[in-house]
Image (cartoon, rainbow, N blue to C red; front, side, top):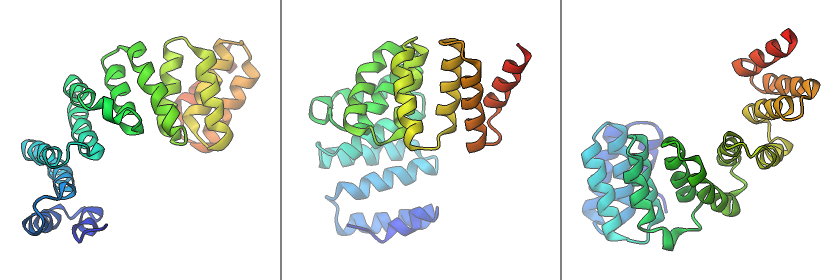
Length: 214
């Protein structure tokens, strides 16, 4: 179901969108979607407390609404409140453990706090239910590589590049070829692939430069 204010949100006309959302709430005060959208708009215009209250209202109206929890958790995450985001999402995890976005956000709270190993179970569940979202899978692969689990990271990166033109995956495959196998030619090929996809990929350019200087 679509609402009149969605066009205003898409156009970035938040003032008009808020007026239309308030009008929609007056007509349909028990619909959590209005509060979720209102919270998102309020956050975008810097009204954090009001956004928080709107999203809490959405949760009050529908305690099983994964979008409401994710939106509020993502707001906390963006504000650097990783523990608050994690506490909120874990409070409903038993009911929403198969939600791709909630698993990803939980994983990233641990990544941003430097507890990479604690992120892996959530990344695994995210991958199980949403492996088609290759940008999220890339973060999983990157975390595995940072943990020294290069074999697993390489498998995921190869899976991404076999289906998508993804510069950062190509670059990291190049690093793996260089550091794990000492295969400089393969590393250079991956760096070149990254540059073909993204000509201003600075790390890939530096990688080729460093290879040529060895």
